[in-house]
Image 1 (tube, rainbow, N blue to C red):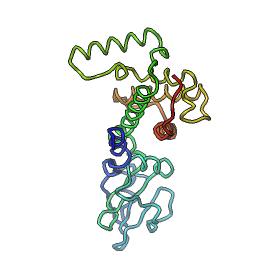
Image 2: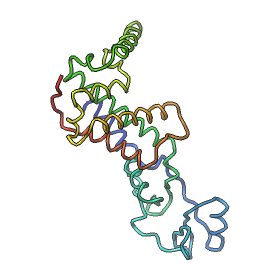
Image 3: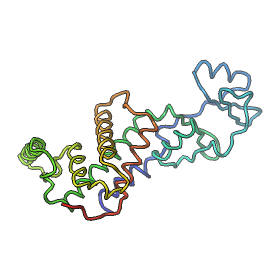
Image 4: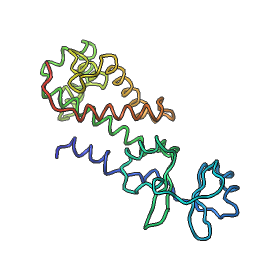
Length: 245
């Protein structure tokens, strides 16, 4: 397992949903509506004669919790993200009893932002490895200004005795430029157009900047973020093919 595999394992499997889940509040049958209104809850679990039942805004009364409303506690965070796009909330069991709840609101918490940034870092690492392996003349694919910027950073890091190469000093936008040349992006998916590839890379760069600067609004809907993560996975999962230099 190389470093990229270990990183992918961390962000796609080892970080589960629990860091964004909330401990469950169980309401009394006689006061659950008032408690929900006070807390601005859309869903609640109600103790009905010792049996835990769920109530969602719009329901006539509490009803049994169906199996499809329960998310396993070991669910990877990025899979939980996709599940919460399709359904607004899930309950999570602990020791055989409903003990936690996770809702779409929880998607805005720090752990998921770390997951997004991790996936972008995986993409960046993967593309740089492809450049090292297949594109010995990659310098011809970016502007002189961008190349000089990379060289300046390289010289600065060498001065600090860092073990680094010029490829490592490329900015994320440079990677988009390199793989848009000669339609190299079609190695990832033959259906890609240049416009689509460039737009997705620009969106990823915008998301990366928003995450790095801890912006409250990332600038994308949850569905758009899901599209970005799917795009990253397609590139990382693409069969390793020789690129035209």
